[in-house]
Image 1: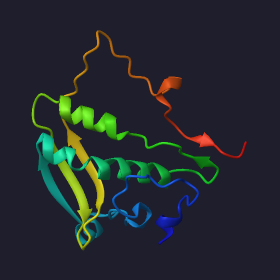
Image 2: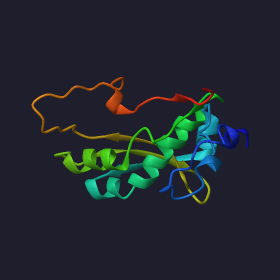
Image 3: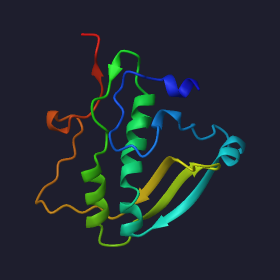
Image 4: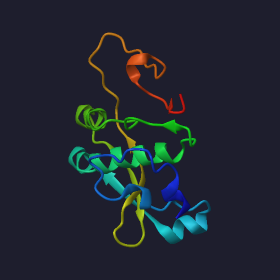
Length: 142
């Protein structure tokens, strides 16, 4: 219950398929993880594309749960377009695992996606500190 109140002022993600703040955290130990979570293997472009709305929403929820009371996150840390492009452009089948609640409604608790990274640019500069990245948290007390 305390997890759901981490940052109630943060905006919900419009495409969230369910109430994201109510999703329980995965267990902190192997025993509690095993009691409350199942892990399923996911392979293939279409299987992963179907999960994009949940993936965006779970990343946004995870980032909101890490915020300090005076911080606010304005956008999901990974956009649907970014995730979907990585899946679509992967030359080989993406594969990975999805953690879900053991009991119904089996909401996503996390994921690991592995795919070949492709870019069609002569150079790629990966910098989350560049202003165009719009990454990070923002102090709302100012």
